[in-house]
Length: 226
Image 1 (cartoon, rainbow, N blue to C red):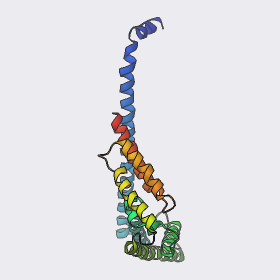
Image 2 (cartoon, rainbow, N blue to C red):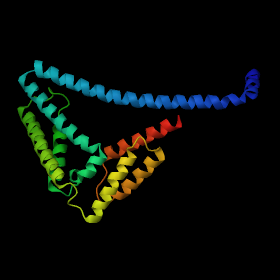
Image 3 (cartoon, rainbow, N blue to C red):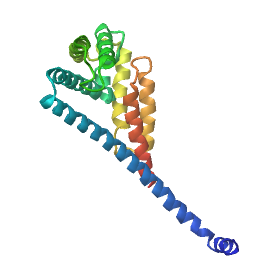
Image 4 (cartoon, rainbow, N blue to C red):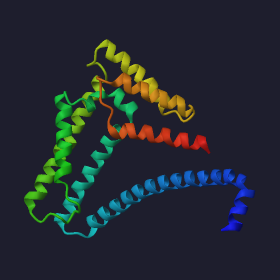
């Protein structure tokens, strides 16, 4: 071990550039892991769509019917997720997450029921009654979502007080700053904290929308350290 300690004592200054290299490597690994995560999600979606197309052309009528219902279910889920992931849009149409509203409550109840009854694969159901229950649940989900969406777009923020509407307007601007890749990470973080304060007691920020903004800010901070 003597030669090693002698080398380290003579070249201790190499620790600093080596640490920088290791730090940069760690950031690169984190970025690579995030890309792989997104790629896996996209690959899973593509594979699911391919499986549904294959079922639609070669499976028995019962399975083809179920695959079609599952595809409809996916489409309305995608429409809802486009709201759930976009805080700016939810601020424009807050009724979609206000469970005090009967149409909103009915939509979310139907969404949960359809998700609960959904089979893992199109050929999982043998009982026609199970297939029919799932088809009815998806129909209810589609109808209730469209009704809630129409009403939310019609009303926008008209159901809120003047003070609440002012808070929503400030939150819109803060959301733009929190999502602005041209702003500094510090500015984005400050804007995100303020917008959550503005929305507190008015609307609940969905976890998916909040995580989306937080993740983009975290990535911006990592890029700034490179």
